[in-house]
Image (tube, rainbow, N blue to C red; front, side):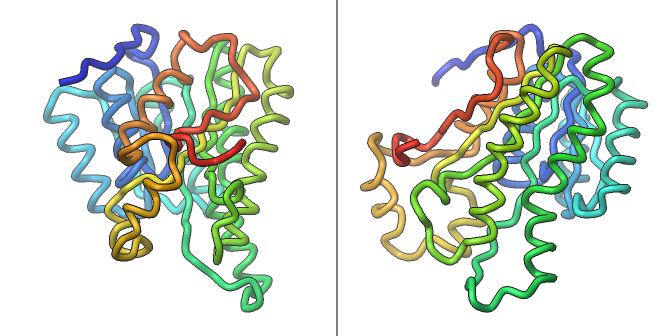
Length: 256
């Protein structure tokens, strides 16, 4: 069994994660909690989130879940404030929540555009707005914005999602400059084809796993845990002089 890194700077560190009840988000909640961090996470999946938090608390780890739709900015910022009351001001923010529902460009309405941008991009900015004052007061902080290689490899039937994910790196670059003098780092974590149950259920067709592997430089498949381990590094003091960058976890698929 492979032994992975432990980051002392993450012990007792307050962390906020969006979309943490399943998939990549769940892997990150588990990974940060295992490091001894104090994890607060939100998701619209109430039962799954409550079950995950209860499991981690029963194991002696610090985790709190609040059911929340991140497109409701007021509710999301209120949840972040509630986490701060229990865990302390967040020193790590992981903007993970997103929705990769396929859609046809010529059928999109203005309302659908706004809704999809809200779930894939808007909440990330306002979460940064909510946590930055506490990070600045502490004199340190790390924000991790989740991107996607989908726009790099021109995946079909995802134009709004890809627009939002390309914009996530613009958000990273701009906020790295805005917040850098307060010792707050902002980076993008860009997954490739991460094999989650959702992807298997909805999008990966028979033979799809073999097609994905053929596009990668490395054999095998990217897992949620692979993404979580990169998030731990970017959150920790080990990466204290890294900001404004994008890190691909894609087994060498995309040409960034």
